[in-house]
Length: 160
Image (cartoon, rainbow, N blue to C red; front, top):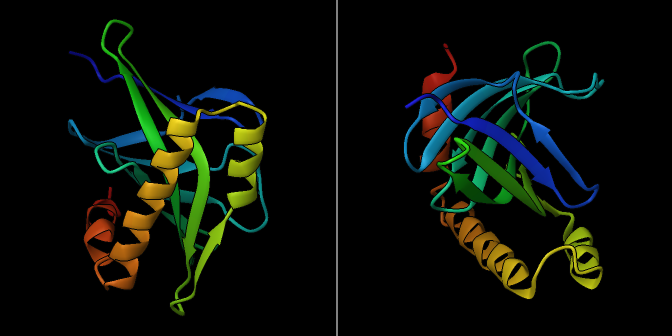
């Protein structure tokens, strides 16, 4: 079987993007690791390495600036929709994000977007509940000092 095509689905703004320029470094049933450059030029970030934990519902990304310094770790709450007939995996961004900075600061962002998406019926109640429960699990992992277990696959593939 050939490597599936990866897509990113966002609800706000509404978009479906083929991640055709991402390089897939690891492809396992519940883990995909990619490296990428930003789709649109930015001053704050330039590239990253992402681990899609399909079974856990998060994407953990190590984000670099144009000088190859780590800016932060960026965690998206996601759900994956696999279509073996079309050989695609659509990664849906469920809006909530967690940023972890080198100094240990943890920032949760875009809860307002989750509320907006729910109000506008862009996502279902079930998806919103899943996103919040997944966020809770991720935060427990971080606060219990086990985030490094999610970083290991990314750090191991950095040399690719």
